[in-house]
Image 1 (cartoon, rainbow, N blue to C red):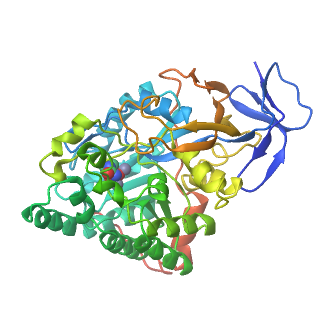
Image 2 (tube, protein in one colour):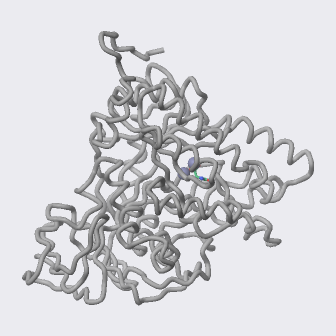
Image 3 (spheres, rainbow, N blue to C red):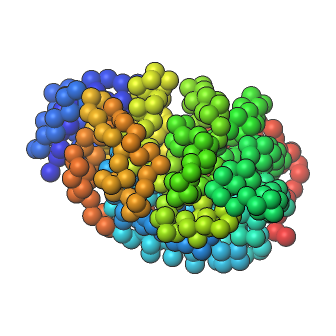
Length: 481
Ligand code: URQ
Ligand code: ZN
Ligand code: ZN
């Protein structure tokens, strides 16, 4: 049964035009004028955009002793209600645990996903087993990205030697390494120093990981990727120090991408000074919100293209879970929500303010990450042959973000009270109406796992341009320890 989306304006990352969109059997089968379909959706006055893709989520993640509150059902429902039709979650094996075992556990958790999803695989230790399993993860599972934590000492953190080994392996496998860039050794010491000085509240979290600690790690990861001959993607970019490092690398021709979070674009570190402990602790995440001045560099990066993707790092914990750190900020589970609000907040603060064009909005919320993750134009485009993941966006409709009305399972929202002009009216997931004007139609299990092949076209150039991979006549360097 085909669906005709009639009378809207199609917006892609590179152009917009008045056109109808015909959807059949989960795919877009035509984009043009005077099309016929068996069922019709009136998109008059609306934009028809590719469904959003949030490449940074943590559904039902055991972290800092707590399991994050939104699982794949409620996380993807929250996403769909906000115009996001695909999430990419982090599969995180415990150090020494098999990636293949962790993958099975994550697939099991994701069986209740209501929208399409995919995974990044985390490298939390290095060994011959990790070296070998990375090939299976890429070639058998279709996961072409590997995440590395340079922070969370004693938990998920890897050191420079492990980073270099894994980056070299990524170069060999045509995979893309991702990094959480904060100097975990310095953070651990500053946490101890602050506690010793009697600073135990949420504000201590912000003081213990200033922008310089993030910038240093970003520079180090960029250097190691350059030496290893692979591209690099830096997650949750929050400040000028990291953005400057990315700009410098790009100017030198290195393939490096940066992912600011929507939280960092509109919220700042004054939130941690709030006298209401629950309020401040609810905003504790790493890297923390920054001084307002850092917002401008992030917007400039999205406008100029030196920053590419806006994500949420949705990792939601209830206040009861946050209170595990009531006496010691280092025990406050790190993470905030945002899946439901990313696109309405970015549209309001970015497009309505004139900072971003609607095409740049589509690039930052969908198309760019689809290309970087090598699933474009299956995802990220309103084009014939693409999956019919579509959001019909009503630029005149309004919404005030409310913790009470949200789909997410936690009882607060870092954007509570934020007024949005421009919100999704109808959201389709692979050609089926998943959410329509507040009515959730998607069901657990509706979502499919999206496999992504290695050697994304945007990845390769880096290794060749510097001839770093293998200078002529030099035998291939095997990195097995
Ligand atoms: O670091 C991350 O990305 C995870 C563990 C979520 N928590 C956070 O504070 N960012
Ligand atoms: Zn992180
Ligand atoms: Zn994260």
